[in-house]
Image (tube, rainbow over all chains, first blue to last red):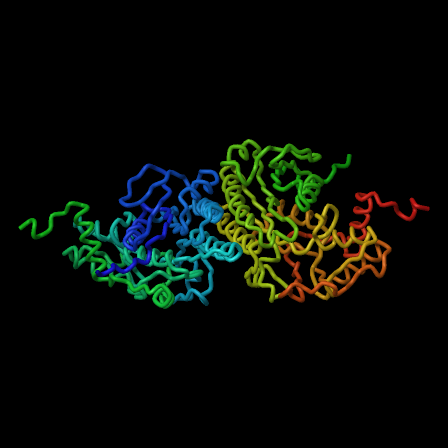
Length: 317
Length: 317
């Protein structure tokens, strides 16, 4: 008789906040696939397949210790945040989320939790210093969002050391993929071109590390289940010009001549390159991205075509 | 007819948190002397001369916006924190105070407030880099307390810039003076020697910037009423060996041979010097300490003698 190999997450009970969100949703799928029992705290009644949903508002509820103790999870993966496209860099709600996150971490440890993983950002780094390495690259955020994430990550690390619990901090770079909110680069480019409308972009020479959101969710899930301490860059390790993405989306949407490259000026001070060193994720989490940029964008365009109910050439034929 | 000169704080309405505390109490006295209308938020009914007391618990109450709007202050001086002697370096309550402070700052700005001053610490700096200058000395705290203060100060600065309000951050060094809690160096030395008991200390060679708490309160009051942005060291500018303080306390308490210098080992990693550059406070706040260490300790010993009801030589005569 053959015994099925034990999954990495079997016997692990994990609380995921923001489980219905863009990244959190993917992390949940990966944790479930790894055999975890997944719980979430949600403001509203919601139905997430395979997830135990508990009603709680992280921003306004009082002490969550007893609710978390009743769940009895050993691990917390905290994905919830205010990330309204465009606005999140400067949103004063960043301050509320730092406060809410700290209260959540305290309550989770008081409830008996032993491992906390939070979601950070490449915006924590000094953007003049690309490529970024977790240990060595200076932390010098230039936005309220970056400051909030850097402050929370630093406090989590210090708090965990003091309380003798384990804590990791996944620094996301640039994401794209299914369920991306409108107002973000790739989602807007795909939807505009699918609709046959003109797209005004910057020249697109700035190089960024773009990662498929499913890969990001898997990396966060692996980080949550690991014992890796401190910051870990979560990125593809491949840095491409933004124009490279748009050109690929033109091909995938079978459009041409709709993009006005250079019609929009780059944002002032936009750095030419934001690249990630991903050695730590590879060596310590065993994480390798599944999607390259071409396949990842194809997957994303397919998702939008289904969502928007666009008839494909085959269906039209 | 001579017109009295207008006081710096006339027409200013200031909310002070921690107004009954060791430093906050002194800041309140100075703000009142400068002509301010002073309000405070206090957990318990309390009576502070000249201060409007409002009931609120910063750690557990919900949104304080409406309460603060009813007060209608333009300036917030936030002194409240958890500072149990010995324990505060590692106290997980530091996390609660960061969260509570952020919620307070948000509510104060929502209520119409225009100036926030918070209380930081020399523990925010990389302690290998003495003397410390606000702009230039690296921030690399080694304790949870230092991390909490550094994170809060950084977030306050970033948040204020985003919201176009004004914010200052007063970094306190080492304080002594009336009402110092037992468990702190100077208070314990004075009380032990007044009681005629033996005092076990380190060799006392480590040099620290010690400041009389009344001076600290005055500097914070001046910072609150100023428009100075960002961190300001609040210190005497004079760095002395700890032994120098104890020897002065021996003289003031008319004791000798009661101190066992070197009976206690210095704390591991205790830096030889923690000195402050105070040019910014002097030039931008016009702040000059009133007490030198000899007069300041004399004032402190007098206060303890009164408090403990010790009969002086004159009374005994």
